[in-house]
Structures are given as C-alpha cells and as structure tokens.
Length: 146
Image 1 (cartoon, rainbow, N blue to C red):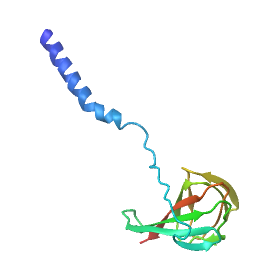
Image 2 (cartoon, one colour; image 1 turned 90 degrees about the vertical axis):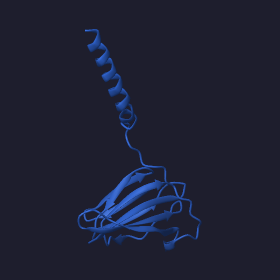
Image 3 (cartoon, rainbow, N blue to C red; image 1 turned 180 degrees about the vertical axis):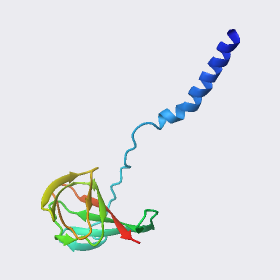
Image 4 (cartoon, helix red, strand yellow; image 1 turned 30 degrees about the vertical axis):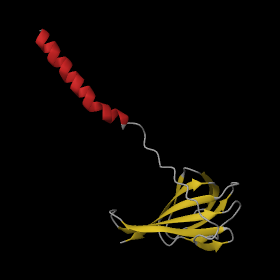
C-alpha cells in the first residue's frame, strides 16, 4: 500500500508541475497597449485636424480576404471627418480618445472609447467626431477582398 501512495504522490507531483504553465496562461488575453505618437504632419490630411497614417498591408489567411491594410486615423480634439461611404468592410479599434460615431443605412449613433471596437460595412456611411480632450486614434483594419 505504501508503494501505491508514493507512486500516486509522484504522479500528482509531475502532473501539477506540468500543468503550472497552463494555469499561468489561463488569464484572459488583453490587447497590447498601442498608442502611437504621431507628429502633426504625419500621414495625409483628409479633413481639418484628421490625418490618415498608413501602417502597412499584410496577406490574409481568411476566406475571401486577400490582404488586410492597417491605417491609423489621427483626430485632434474636437476634429471630425467627412461622412463617407466605406469601400470595404473594416474593423476599427480605438487606441486613444473617445468618439461619437454616426452611421446611416440604418441611422444610428453611438460612442466608442479607448479599448473598444466597432465595425464599418462596405457600402455603408460612417462619420466620426473626437469628443475627448486628447488626440484620438482609430486603428483601422481594412479587409481587402480576394
């Protein structure tokens, strides 16, 4: 009986040691803190106080998506972009600031702030205003169709 207890203890000890890294990784994943610092002249101005900075384009493994283009829309406090129709589907992540987003088709308005996502659909209209007192940044992932 004593031999079984030693074996059981050894097995439990080894199992616990092997599982320890799994418990360390079990905490919820969080987005990395990404708040780029741009100068006032970086990128291309699309509206007063709003500039687009091209971050890069990468190939995609998603079905129907050839590549993803990453853009940062940098808004000065109080700045607003021009209402526009989206050429592609997009996912937007707010890395800084707080925005009022107005959409049509259907009409809706909502607020997004740092750490939140929202989406834009191809053919839909979108209009953003930075309502914070800091520079606001949308990290936009444009889904380029195959």
